[in-house]
Image (cartoon, rainbow, N blue to C red; front, side, top):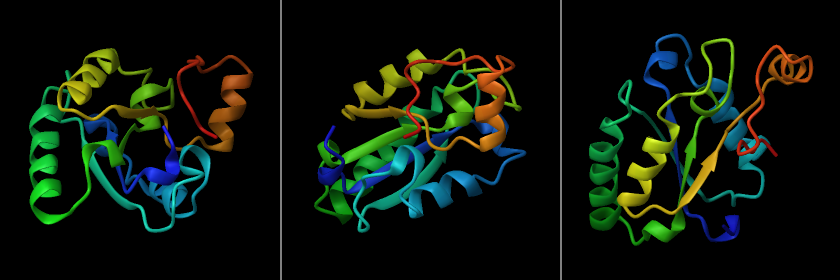
Length: 145
């Protein structure tokens, strides 16, 4: 995926984590173009949505609604959208381990025609240190930088 061609970033957050987390760090990373968001253009739009809860089946309806609005209100194509699965979904963290439905959620995203999928958003220094110490598991597919 060429980040220069991306015009919209959608971040899918864990419904359960959203009850305790505002998403501030992920948003700051996007607007600061750091961590997994490094390389996106300053004009890239940003939207967050939750998975809807375990098993992530609500992602389909939310992406369908997003795609309809994208088609009717913008000239942005699905190929110009990157869908990030937030770090709370794809990593072992203080909230919980990696979501057991990640593969299913990625399948839903692809079935809805969005092929630019990125695992990861933001990683705190404390989480980085706990991963290095082996307290949190590490997953190779997760991109932070």
